[in-house]
Image: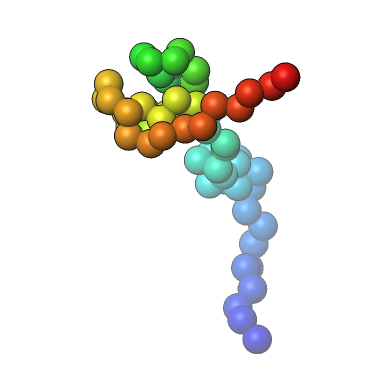
Length: 64
């Protein structure tokens, strides 16, 4: 059987431990080619460009 705590931790001590557990906001940048939002240092999923050149060929959907 594992050891159990001898005393209750205060709410302040518990909350200080959980201070870094908050969900962080996603850092998004605009693509210079198409203007859509994307993650930095990642190929744009909308147009397939990275650092000014096309890296991935993306097929355009034609809606009739």
